[in-house]
Image 1 (cartoon, rainbow over the protein chains, first blue to last red):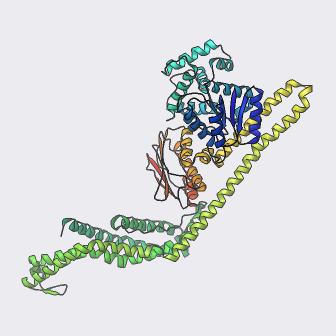
Image 2 (image 1 turned 30 degrees about the vertical axis):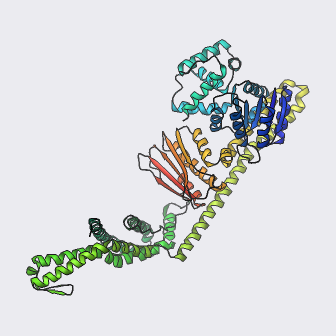
Image 3 (image 1 turned 180 degrees about the vertical axis):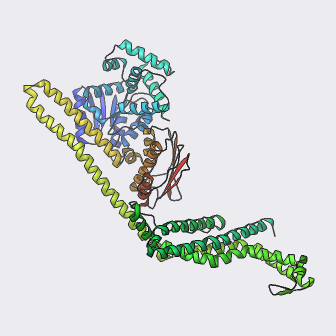
Length: 217
Length: 418
C-alpha cells in the first residue's frame, strides 16, 4: 500500500516512516510543506495520505486545507489527518463531503502502533477513523441537548466505538463480547435513533456521525 | 412657519423648563451638600459622606450628558477614573475611595459645572420657555388683561390702554416668532455650557490619556507576569514531572528487562501512560496560552470551535473579511471565551448567541444568552477582568443584564484587519 506522508517535524516524520515501513507500507513520499504535499498527492496517486494539520510555510491549517482540496479534485481520496489537538470543527469539514475515507486522530494515537496502523488501513479502504476525543465531545453535547433516544449504557459504548469507525469485529474484541452481540446492539441503536439501515459499514458510520453532529448545532 | 418647527420649538421650551428646574433644584442642592461634605472631611464624617454625594453628583452629571446627546446631539465625554481592582473594604477602603475621588480632576470639573449650571445654565435654559410665556402674556394683555392689572411695563412699552396693549401684543408675536426659531438652539446652548465645564481641556485630556495608558500598561505587565508564573508552575508540576518519571521508568526497565521481563513490560505500559498524560497536560496548557485553532484559523473559527465544546447550544455568526493583529485576536478570543464561560457557569443559559463582526475600524463581539441575567461588572470579577484586559487595546465592554435576563455583553476593540 502506497502512502504519502506530510509532517514538518523531522523526528515525527522519521518515526512515522519507520513505523509504516515496519508494517509493510510503501512510503511514496515523505514531505514537509503544504505545496509539496499538494504536488505529491496529485502526481503520486497514493492509496492513502497521512497528513499533519499544521504545515509550513504558513504554519496554519495548511495540511488540512491541502487534503480537503485534494479530495475535491479526487473525491474519496483516503486521508488520515493527524494533529496535536482535535476539533469538532475540523472533523465536520473532513466529513462534510460524505464520501468516507477520512481519518482524524490525535498524534498521541501513534503510541498504540497496532490501533494506529489499523486506522490507516481502515481509512485506505474507504472507512472512517475518528479520534475518541471527537466522539466524546459529540456525545457529551448530544447528551446535554437531547438524551440519546433511550440507549442502554452498553449501546452507548457500542455507538461510541462505531462512531470512531471500528468494525463490528473490532468492537467485539474491545468489549469482550461476540460479534453477534455487537450486531444486535447496532441494529437496536439504528432502530432507537431512527437511522436508515445499511449493510455497508462505512455508510453506517457516516450516518451515526451525522446524527451525532446534528445534535451539536 | 411649518408645524414641525412649531412642535420642535414647543418641545424645546418644555426641555428648557425641565433643564432649568434640574439646574436650579438639583445642581444647587448637590453643590451645597458637596461643599458641606468636603468641609466635614476635616471632622472625619465627610470621609464617609463625600463618596456617596459625589456618586450622586456623577449620576446627575451623567444624566445631563445623556440628555445632551439625546436632545441636542452634544457629546460630553465621561472622564471619571475607574477605581482600582484591589480597593480595600471597611474604613480604610472608605478613606482610600474618598482620597481617590478628591484627587480625580473630574470631581473638580463636576463642581465647576454645578456652579455654572445653577447660574448661567439655568438662565439660558429658562430662556426657552420664558420667551414663549412672555409672548403669550403680551397677547393676553391685548385680550383685556391690561384692564385689571392697570399700568404695566411690558418690556419697553408702557401698557395703559387698548392701543398700547396692541403694541404689546405685536411685541409678544415677535417674542413667539423668535422663540420658534431659537428655542432648539437655546437648549443646545445650555448643553454647550455644560460641555465647556464638564469636558476636560486638551491638557487635561492628555493627562487623562497618559493616566489611562499607565494604568492599562501596568495591568498588561501584571497579567502577563502572572500568566508566565502560572505556565511555569503548570510545566514544572505537570509535564516536566511526568517526563522525569518516564525517564526513571526507562532506567528501571533497562535493569529489569533480562531479570524480570514481566515486570519490565508492566513498567513500559506505565511509562507510555505517563508520556500520554504529559501530552494531554501540554495540550491543555497550550489551549490556555494560545488555542491552536486561533493560530491556524483566526478568531472567527476559534470561537466557532470553542462554541462546539460548550455544553450549551451556541450559535456563532462571524463576519470578518480578514484577521486582526495576533495580540488583538488573542485578546478578543479570551474575552469572548470568558464571557461564554460566565454565561454557562453563572447565568444558567440554555442558548447562547455570538455575533462577531468588523465595522468602521472596530472589532465588535456581542454575546447574548437567555440566562437569569443580573450580571454586573465588578473590579476583580470575571467581567471586570475582561474589561481591564480589553483596556490594554483601548477596547471597551458594555453589559446589559436585567434581572431575569437576557444578558447581552458587547465588546469593542479598535483595530484594522489584514
